[in-house]
Image (cartoon, rainbow, N blue to C red; front, side, top):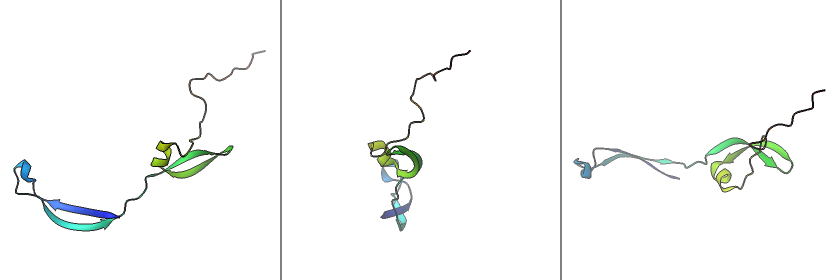
Length: 77
């Protein structure tokens, strides 16, 4: 939880008279959830995961294919 503060006026260091608070309301800090494909065990599932978990490596993103590889071609008869 936190506060959302609404102010008016120009800051003193910018040549104004100072900032005045005109309203304070409560607000919630919510996690930044993303729908991604996650590697769980041997299967791939869609999950809603927070970005902090993705960045820190707590969740393994599913790899579509290995990067920089050429698909194997079949022999033409």
